[in-house]
Amino acid sequence: MGNNKMSEPQKAQGHQGATGLGVDQQKKQGVMPVLQYVWRLFWRDKPGLLGLIMVLILVFCAVGAPWITAYDPVKPNLRDAKKPPVWMENGIKGHLLGTDNLGRDLFTRIIYGSRVSLTVGFLGVLMACSAGMAIGMAAGYFGGRIDALIMGLVNMILALPYLVFVVFIAAILGRSLLNVILIFGLTDIPIFVRIARGEVLRMREAGFIESAQSVGASTFRILSTHVLPNLIGPLITLATFEMSAMIFYEAGLGFLGLSVPPNVPSWGNMLAVGRQYLTIYPWFATFPGLAIVFAGIGMNLLGDWLRDALDPRLRRMKR
Image (cartoon, rainbow, N blue to C red):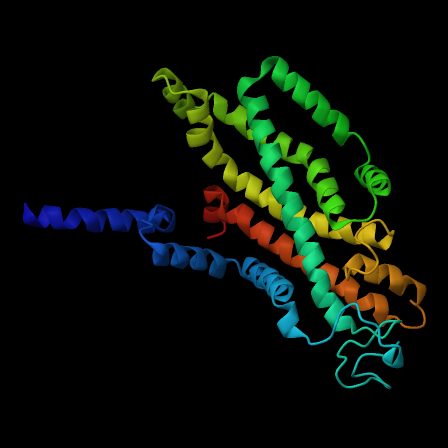
């Protein structure tokens, strides 16, 4: 009897090792086991780890900008204007990436520009995801006329050319960081509504929803306890990709002169200035453009990892 009792955990452990389900079914008690679990997922997906590192670098630059560089991002210094990067001929020490047409340090302006991009991306996605999730849950769960009305509005908005729509609104509201956040947050809601609605439609007829309804659970309890946790994964993945898109679109608005005011350092504003000197002083636009590409690649790599990590089926296929 004692030998049989001792062998049952070993058999269960051997069965998990044979099927490859041990990582997914391990107990997560405390913070450290969870962190170790997440680290193993990252270690198995090197591009995802690279994306996380790139995003963390962006966050570090945005938060620690005053400690990374000592220059003022907006104060001009005409004596050092239009200096090339330090490794080029006539480059001056102390200005790693050179200076712009007003003598402002480009490295400093790129570092401070990350604040605008991450603020617009994070707050815009937070607004769109929160509102889109609530509206999509209502449309998918209740159905009927509510669903028809909501999806009619969503399809009408999605039928509009997105960039033209955003530029039109930005031209009306004027240049302001708050306006840019509101524009992207509001215009991105339909995308989250469609994803949330589709997931809720899939879950509405599932057994665990029918069981909750059969025992008399309220609609709020069903949505908050059973539906919402299953929406977190797909919406977080979508939010990562949309944050990358918002960074690109904000730079595009800045390039057109419709984003933040000219005195605010942003990558789009720097591209707009660099366009005028592209053939003479190419570093004005090159380095802000590379910063935008860096942010986009990091966000997309992290989004790919989140998509795989939050879907157990994809995670097991990659083993």
